[in-house]
Image (cartoon, rainbow, N blue to C red):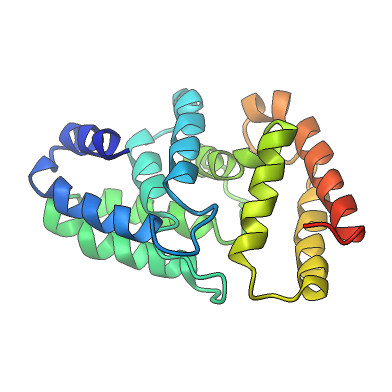
Amino acid sequence: MKSRWLAFAQGLGIEAAAEEVWLGLAAAYGADGRFYHNLQHIEHALDVATQLQDLAGDFTAVQLAIWFHDVVYDPRRSDNEAESAAYAERVLPPLGVPDALLTKVRDLILATKTHETAVANPDVWVMLDADLAILSALPAQYDAYAQAIRQEYSFVPDEAYMVGRTAVLQKFLARSPFYFTEQMRAWGDTAVVRNLSWEIEQLGEGKP
């Protein structure tokens, strides 16, 4: 992932300080307790976004937002998205990232708080679909994701986790269609229903 970031930074013309920024990203995403919200998640989201890049109006903004959207992550807090956006706003301006681009990046990061949007913005659609692409993964990959999320919330007792997690999954299931882009809907919506229904069933049986 380091080489991927450095190549991206070079394309942006910010390679001079790209190494320093990478050290911050690597430290954040590699921190203890990051069982899912780590560089593997960033890599997967970038891969999916790349498949959808023709839909984006500003794919550079989408990529930057993906790199930074979970840089601050504490499952005990509710302001991770705002703090991640603030982090990006601190480290990117000294590299010469224009204010207009930075504003787009901030807004895209903040959109991941609710994963909902009433705005017809293809950049937001690509961002949100890439971030939640894991929900349409193959069963074994989804199982690993569900277990990783449970590990990140290991401080929550089983019964409370079951209630809270089930509520989140049911809210997602109520969305129809689930994804925002036609490409993701075409092959992903059915898989989302399958995966989330399976996890809800597992939670009801007291399984992680």
